[in-house]
Image (cartoon, rainbow, N blue to C red; front, side):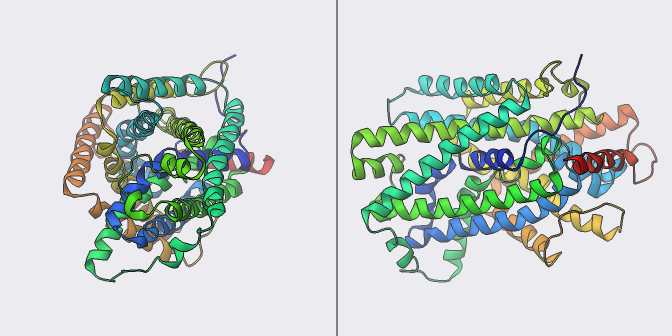
Length: 467
């Protein structure tokens, strides 16, 4: 018999492990020298602290919305609910799916490209070989995800253990070296609080925030989470707190062994760090673990993003074929295959340096800022929506998140900002054509509220009671 709906089978442990594997990936290993180079001083640690702070603040927005609307698709549902399902919410949710079809494969491709780039420490690759390897990573991930969600939960825990093992080994190596706290003691050496420092911090945060992205992945899997009103917020805050401590300790560990002046010049800084501490064999082993972590990140990101087009299609707002579930496994296989296919093409076409900032620029406007504003609007409407998680000092964290994301957007650069606007404009044109053909808003007159999300939310609440 065909499977028609998801069952909630991922608990807090699985949700947290999926988030953390998505957050780590290849990001901190390749962006560490970038951040040090941008900040150009021992105060580069502030960029990692600022990235963690932004993630914490933004996670409050995600927690409010994720706990209130725990369904597959995450931001797709949030934008519909906050801006009105039959008016602006219809447009913004469409734009989110539109940019997801570009941005999600970019995220997947960036990790795959980073994988092949770091592999060259073990064995130098030609340009063609590197592209074939990054494409092969994407294909392997899709094959692993082509199965039931409970099996994926078990795989994610194993990969999470590999992530923790790698980071803890790096940190333990620095501690054993005996100079672990030196970077923290000298964090303010040479610092001048002026415009140049603030600008450098902003540019550094573009890279550090990239390494934190993924703390919200659990929201895209909302329909699979057991007891979502509690486990969605908890998994996000646990993930961010754990990753922030690990990132800071890893940076301190590496720079306590390799001076920051040297670290900023090395593409394989972690491998060189381990080689200096324990020799070439240990360096190769840690490189292998970093590759496993990168692979785990692609796994987690692809899992979460595959639920977005599915949710939109199941809601009638995207191509119907994306709503298909595997007849035995109950997972959105069409969405998974299409996103994986696009990511495969991107992994062959682009360089890593071209995608990191582009990923942020594309999602800040349509996703992060838009849903933060939408949360404020939704609460002002005084609707009957139940918010199981309530952020402290509302709405101060929301305004702070909007300001911080706007600063990051400016720091990505004018070209990428304009590129994001062009992508949004093309999506707007596509929506208008679609709406005209189907006689949807703004080409018809409907109420600003539709019961579909509320009725689905009622199903969620009943499911939550059983969880």
